[in-house]
Image 1 (spheres, helix red, strand yellow):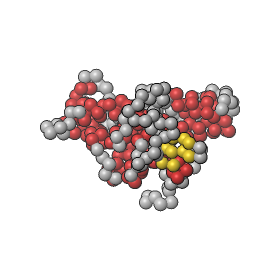
Image 2 (spheres, helix red, strand yellow; image 1 turned 135 degrees about the horizontal axis):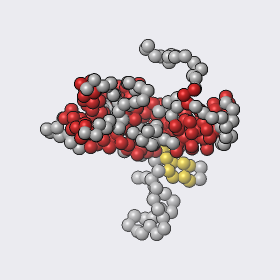
Image 3 (tube, one colour; image 1 turned 60 degrees about the vertical axis):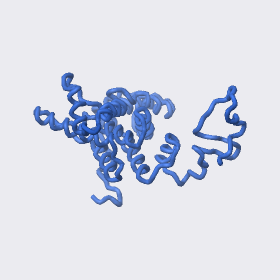
Image 4 (tube, rainbow, N blue to C red; image 1 turned 45 degrees about the vertical axis):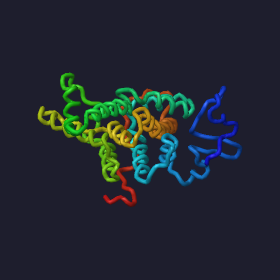
Length: 281
């Protein structure tokens, strides 16, 4: 039986002015995260696994671990043009600390047109559809009903379409992993059905087909992992921080301070396309 924390209020007695937390317990020479010794987790759990443990309170299975890693890698960076990246670069150019540049970038995330801004909307959209699915309503039926509700306004569902990608490679890979690892649930199955139905309607209207984007795939996969909409968005935010910091560092090292930044004028001069050593391609 687990021991009670020092000075814990006995069961059944008023808590007086104490308040509970079930996340981390710190004692002299000992740190427990969700009950596990932090120093034992170090070197044994990946960062993604540790985040999953922190959020859910449980260790990730090997398959969930792979998907969590993929979710975090998917959002590392998306080039020099996103508003969050520009915010980080502008602040870095003032000579402010890197943490301030990263914070500026984080504050620019999550808006409807900014990075990660469609994750919550897409998950709620999918939740609405899942509420329709039952004995007489398939995923395809639910997808048609969801899109019919938006047909009059012409609104594209959140999590679909992208300004740069016809087929967002991040979304393709996340959905592929969910399928390969047999982690597909209602959210990913409905997302596929909506993508198929939306594409057929656009093709019939002579319009370019819109596919699931990274925000939509994150919403679908995170939903099937049992994570809520806000937590899924925070996973995106956590994963984007390294990219923001890297852009801030590059801005300091390679550019003049306080320069006007025109994102349309940037030119990539990094390595050409490379493959991982164990890549099958």
